[in-house]
Each structure stands twice: as structure tokens, then as C-alpha cells.
Amino acid sequence: SVDLIIVPGLAFTKDGKRCGHGKGYYDKLLPKFKNAYKIGIAYGFQIIDHVPMEEHDVMVDEVVFV
Image 1: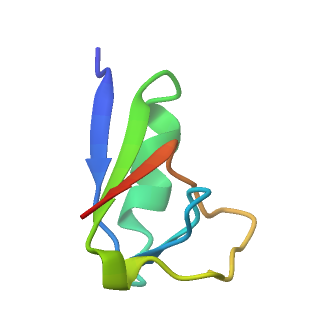
Image 2: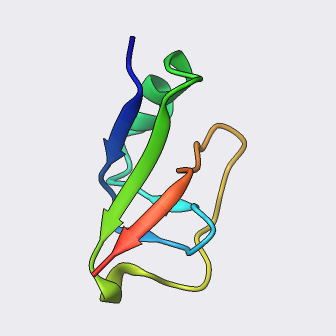
């Protein structure tokens, strides 16, 4: 079983919305691990106020930034 997934992204909001690389890889993978805690790791400049979301987009549970 998988308990933790570190999710890459180009940009994140503080509440867990993410902008990936546009291929949808993680949006297809993450629903298979419903119980895994998802963390996005970002630099401060990658934290933005708004990320457009579509119905299939998966949010992370927490965003850690430096």
C-alpha cells in the first residue's frame, strides 16, 4: 500500500490546487491511491492565488514550500 505521494507541479495554491505539466499523468494516477496523503513541494515563487481546475483535476492534501 502507498501512504504518501509527493506530487510535482509548476504552480500550486495554498489550498492544494495544482498546475502540472499538462499531460494529466498524476490526475490519472492519484485516484488509484485514495488513502495516500498527497504533498506538493514548491518554491515560494510557485505559490499563486488561482489555478484553473477541471472536473478531473486532483488536488494535493498539503503544499510545502520553501
